[in-house]
Image (cartoon, rainbow, N blue to C red; front, side):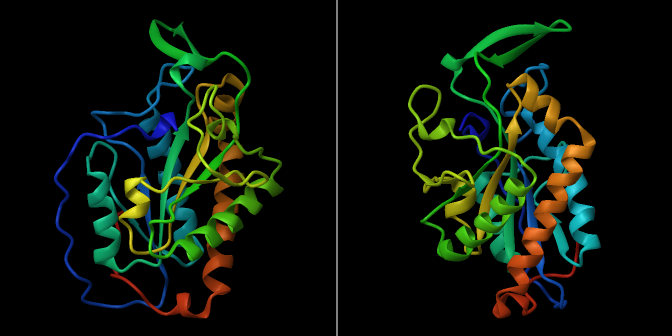
Length: 255
């Protein structure tokens, strides 16, 4: 999963224990990577982190409008370690953790190109779609996988294909594929998932090194459809599990 490279260690800020409780469920949204790392380089020569930040900025108000309380692990320009992101979620006693990334493939399956004077990378063959990641080392794996399934169904209903390259060896990393139809992978050591004590998943929105898929995720109407699907999946998840409707977490928000 090229879009989830190891990030530099950054000291996580402390998060105070919640002092008040609200009836609304709390979701922690994580924009993947840090400015110093930036993640994958797209076919346009843009860093992945800019796509992540934009998607989270659009997703957060949509979730709030649906009745969720939303906390961001970091704002654009800020840095936070992977473990720090999980600890923040635990300290806030959130209901759900969702990490947003944009994808690529192994370097051997990319060719370097130049776009408007910037170095960029493009897939050697069409390689698009979303993917979802869960960790069996997450203590609430069952609920994590349940949410991933609901989200996968929503994206599938949009006609969005799953990105299956990561299950192979040519351009991927032989990741265990739990559900090929819905694009759900098992990635046990992924820090933001395994160190979380609440249901946690990672969504790769699209493959930004594929020209057609980059065009898809760069289109606001397409992003809006995906975001609506995420909101529907989150609402289905919290409503279908009575215990998840109990208040968990702090009342403050990162706007």
